[in-house]
Length: 199
Image 1 (tube, one colour):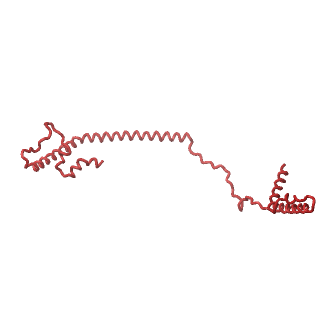
Image 2 (cartoon, helix red, strand yellow):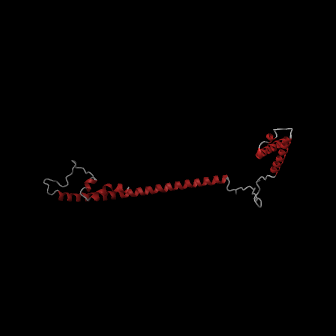
């Protein structure tokens, strides 16, 4: 089976070779099978076939070869990493770190709550002093405004300096406009928008 296949392939190769030489060998042998022309065609066919066989036999095929000096050594050993901590050890360490972190968190929350209480107590203790200072500042501004109002409205007959605009005897906290209306514009803007600019 294999030999027949090789013969068929060889015959095909010879046929292609003869066709490159100048036509089909069957067509050359076709005119006369009995005369001298037929014998000449047969001899030509055999000679051309022999040359094609020799050419195919001497044809060099490029084959993959190893590099000069051969291949280097092949590392076929298993490169396993060094075994570290076991799963139980890593699980225990994780639980320990988690417990320590929660302990530190609870401790800091307790300390922060204590600091907030201390700050709140300090603010409560200082609140009367802050209110007193604010009231003194308000009264000083009102006195300066009354003096300035007396200077401005001295030529207006029937004007009462310091008359309240409210029909009530109760104390009404003056607004920013009332306190700083007669002050320089910078002080008025700082008192009205200073906290917003700061924030």
